[in-house]
Image 1: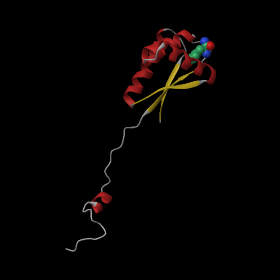
Image 2: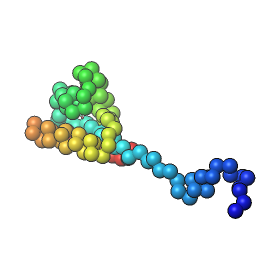
Image 3: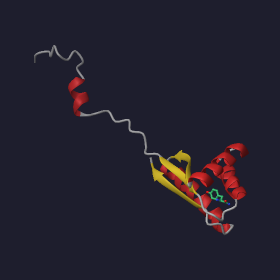
Image 4: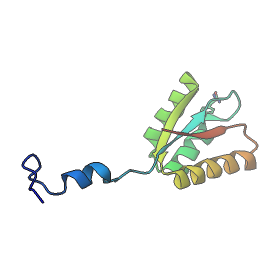
Length: 106
Ligand code: TYC
């Protein structure tokens, strides 16, 4: 067999044939939606408890949702995002607030 002078790297053909795949897992935005009834303090509490925000951060994000209609409150793996949504929706239901939390693939 003749050596290929165009490809000093003997792996070049193989690398083209089988692309090394180091795909990151898809990530999901978790969003909070505004409504007219959920108390601001409840939303702040949710952001502190389930999203690890300090009070100032939580208040700021709550105000963003209040003013803009929604905000991304975090980006997580599918499993973690689902857990956050479930936790928020359960807390809202327990307190009979109409707060909505959704997730969307990035
Ligand atoms: N708009 C609500 C109020 O005025 C507060 C609120 C903020 C509700 C954020 C939901 O995701 C929300 N009491």
